[in-house]
Length: 98
Image (cartoon, rainbow, N blue to C red; front, side, top):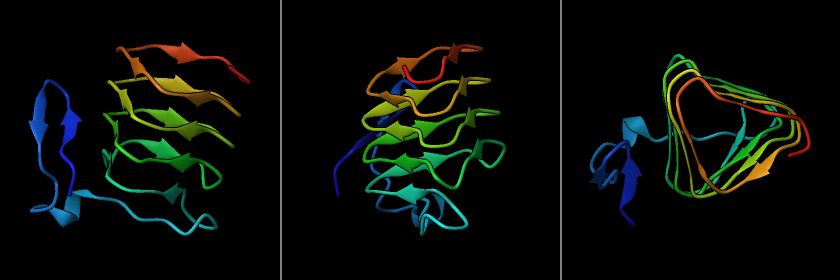
């Protein structure tokens, strides 16, 4: 399993499968590869997330969002239909169709 960046530390998530998330795209988002989603985060069921994504505390991920190789810090809102590969800092908002 590939290492994943979580915050400022490099960790292997293979030994903690309860931290990895899975989804089927109907009741929960489609998850690909290594993905960590904090329990307080809200992710729309039509979002497609991964591989190598970390979603932190109180994040809000909108409909149709596609996240790849992405780190989201606390209190971030990603609006509808955003496709992005990046790191987003605390208390940020990414507009629709970005």
